[in-house]
Amino acid sequence: MDKNHTWLIVGLGLLGGRYAQLLSARGYTVTGITRSAETLRTALDRGYIAAGKTTDFTDLIERADRVVFGLYPTVLLDWVRQYGGHFRPGTRITDVSGVKQGLVEPVQAALPAGVEFIASHPMAGRETTGIAHCTEVRFDDANFIVTPTPANTPAGIAWCRALAQTLGFARISELTPAAHDRMIGYVSQLCHAIAVSLMCASDNSELARYTGDSFRDLTRIARINETMWAELFLWNKQNLIDEIGQFTAALDALRSKLEAGDRAGLEQMFRLSTERRAAFDKK
Amino acid sequence: MDKNHTWLIVGLGLLGGRYAQLLSARGYTVTGITRSAETLRTALDRGYIAAGKTTDFTDLIERADRVVFGLYPTVLLDWVRQYGGHFRPGTRITDVSGVKQGLVEPVQAALPAGVEFIASHPMAGRETTGIAHCTEVRFDDANFIVTPTPANTPAGIAWCRALAQTLGFARISELTPAAHDRMIGYVSQLCHAIAVSLMCASDNSELARYTGDSFRDLTRIARINETMWAELFLWNKQNLIDEIGQFTAALDALRSKLEAGDRAGLEQMFRLSTERRAAFDKK
Image: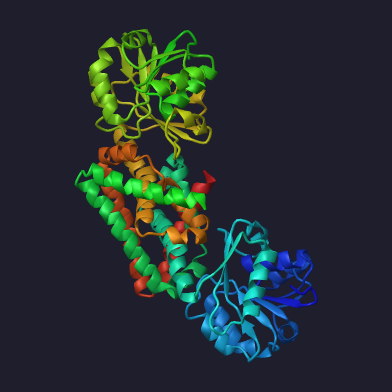
């Protein structure tokens, strides 16, 4: 990536802040836009950005060569419709959104000719939020998914992959927006739905002293940013409903075997889960 | 605990082996009974036991002052009915079983007068099995639950707690067998049922490359010893069915909110799960 390019991070939250911090640390010129004066102060004080604004920021947009949207999906689309006209042709843009269908193509359509939006999803997060915690986010064992559309160019996609490499992601791959959202419905959103349900199932506070690793592992992600996750769930509603349906069917099958005292049936499910999980550990 | 006492570990698997290894390391005389010649050889070669047998072991039973049953619940009851008469009065016995109701009182009833069985559950395990892996089991962050009945004496219970301290458990507590089984149905068995169902829900092998920490955390315990867990599930059948019912109701509530596009309702569940989970991290 060209060190003469000026970067603009729009939205300096947990991920936007981390991108700004890492790009600055690697010698890039990074600017930032945030709604919060406190966030802006933190970003400047810590040297995550060279310059930034909370309002009247069209000059920052016009000066940017490379852009990252660190915004929630609904905010992102509104922002692009309001300010997207200020980007110069030749500008390349990516995002950090956890959902892609219904977002990527409208954003691409809202941008001026010659401005390329290559969507991507850094699959990393924390139970915390905000720029103050951003250095807790680890990319070195995380997946980075580029979700190109027919509107994207090979050079744009290559730039997005180079960004992921610069940020230190462990694995970089490409999926269509639709395939991405199906995948994320299963490996991330369904897991969060389960963890939340497990915590909501009963008032278990008196059981905290007895919980071992199993329970803690399953519920770690039940500490959740409610605004962001409600948005992600609703945006990917149909995929997630389908995944909950498949999971519920499997759990129902287990319960039926249990009710019937079907030891062989239970052992068969346990063997299948053991085999499949072992394959995950090898990768 | 009296260093002149001779210990007998019946069943030298993952937990029985670990008990033998730690007690020997702390200077106690430990003997062992196992069905497997290979396990016996391993236990002797590694110095986990001073003596052991696979057959004709009544002399070991008669010499034992302190005993640990490292057996599956069904095997344990059969074993006690067959060999329990050989224990001397004054002998104290505990176990490692993950279920207690319907087990503890029959075992107590099957033992001769003056032989005290104080049941307990070391809440520690691994995805592995067998004595070869026993040193991987960690007790230093684990719970140890004593499950006394009216047949137990204060001295017997104190001995069982002292054993847990010697083995290095982080927290030692007492529950009735019924309360123990309800608790374990929620914090352990329900978690395993969920993890297994999540792996069985779909053929997800092509998704392994995209999985992040969430999915890996939720499914780690889907690698399961199928024989032992089928036995534990069936032994605690009604409690586990009740817990699955409560969990399913919570997940159904989440799905309904999602279907209805009820953002506020989703955020409310997320806040509840976040609050409850945060309380767990404090303890």
